Image (cartoon, rainbow, N blue to C red; front, side, top):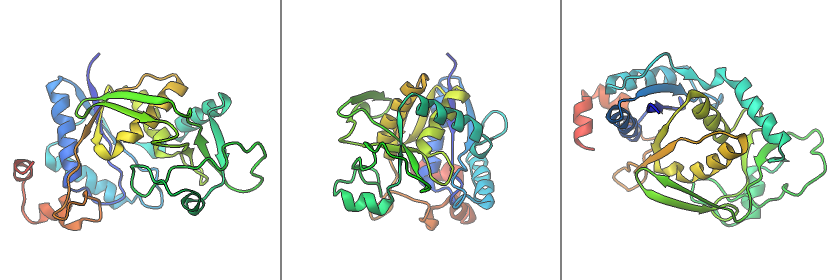
Length: 264
């Protein structure tokens, strides 16, 4: 099978050095395999995604020397695909409606999982048979309790997580009518024929959720390669709020892609 990779920035801010290194690793792995790269614009967060960030991401990626085939794919154009997957998951009994807010979850548990700003869902709505009435609800995936999820990561090696312990029931559709990240990325990577996903180590545990979705949807998962995260001088992982390390700022200072890569 021919290697098919992707870069998939989310236009919620300017790309930083961490994005640049991860995207470059993705391209280098693709080149080594004699494959092809695709570009996906993950623009489902309508409250935070902005046209100027989308334009800047394309400009930054081209400046870095990234090359992809065809026109960028916009997630916002693919809602029908996500809805189709949602209905299949509903029909097969994998989902339940949840009216819990983030505050409800935070107050119901003291055990955060390994991802930032996310708490382990306590199962409040899991057993509810009654309707949510007119109250807006998220749709959560019912994880199989105590199921061990294993996969081999191309960089970090064997991985093992336990459903219900390392991660809980997770949202696949939000009450605002938009698909959640976990569902959208699975549907897209499968339909685009991606053979390997290269991304940051902060998404390792997301891979376990996505593997459950691949299985529930009857789809074949790609291989995974998670890159180590880049940190600032204080040891905090880079985020889009680090304006001084954004590619836009570094380009304005006259930095070249070669200079950046020399420090990696």
